[in-house]
Image 1 (cartoon, helix red, strand yellow):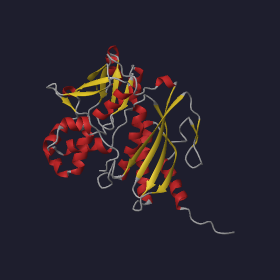
Image 2 (cartoon, helix red, strand yellow):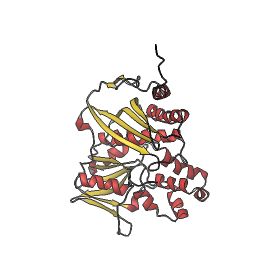
Image 3 (cartoon, helix red, strand yellow):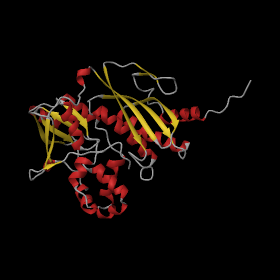
Image 4 (cartoon, helix red, strand yellow):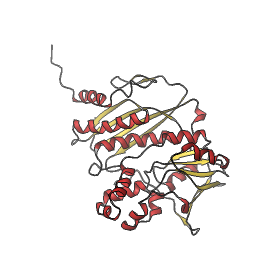
Length: 335
C-alpha cells in the first residue's frame, strides 16, 4: 500500500479544533461541529447571520497587537453585529488566511483568543476553513438566534419623535490606536489610563447583553458603533429614512481621551465621532421607554445624545450650535 503523504492543512485543522475545545459540542443547537464537511445545527425560531473580516494592515498590525488579542478582537467585532440586532449569540464559523511567517504555534495562539471570547459570549465555534494568504486575514460568520424574526432590531426603525441613545463611552478605541502608533504619548497619560485606551482598541467587548436588553425595552433601530458615530448614525438615517440630530456636548467620552487628544494635537470630538471601533450600541427609542431602557442595561451606562425628526441625514451639532461633518472609518483604507 502506498504511504499516505503528509497533509499539513488537515493536521493544522485538527490542532485548531483541539485548541478551541468543545465550544461547538456544548451548544444545544450544534449537532455536528468542526472537523466535518459542514456544521449541522438545529435552530429553534429565527436566525440572524452576519459576516465580518479583519485584515492585517487594514484593521490591525501584528507589530502592536499579540495574536491572542487579534483572535479575541476578530470574534468580538463579529459578535457586535449580532448584539446590534438584539440577538442571542449562537454559532461562529472562522476562515483563517495564514501568511508565510505565521507558524502553527501562532495559529494556536490566535485560536486561543477566539476560544476565550466564544466561551465568554456563549458562542459555539462550529466550523471554518484555513488557507495560505499573503497577509493574516480572519473572516468570521456569526449566527444569532431569536424566538421570531420580529424580535430582531434592524437599522430601519428610527422615526420622528424618537430619541437617540448610546451605550458606554466613546473615543477610547481611536485614542488607543494613537497610543499604539505613537508610544511617546503614554507619558502624558500615565500607564493605567494609556492601558485602558489601548484595551478598547485591541480587546473590545461586544454589547450582547445590552443589545438584548435594548431590544426588549423597545429599541426601534440599532447599530454598533464600529465605523464612527457619525458614519454609523448615517446608516440609521438612510435606512429610516430619518433625520438624526446628535448633540456633541452630551457625548459620553471615555476618560483619558481628552488628555490624549491634547497631547497628540487631536480633537477629542473627532476621536469620539469619527475614529470608530468603540463597538458601543447606538439606538433609536420612543421617549416613553427611556427609563426602562436605562434600567435594563445597567450597570452599563445609557446616554441620550440626540433626537429623530422628519427628513434623511445626520447633523452633529456642537455646543455653539455649529455643525460638524459626519465622518467615519473607511475599510478600503490601509493602516
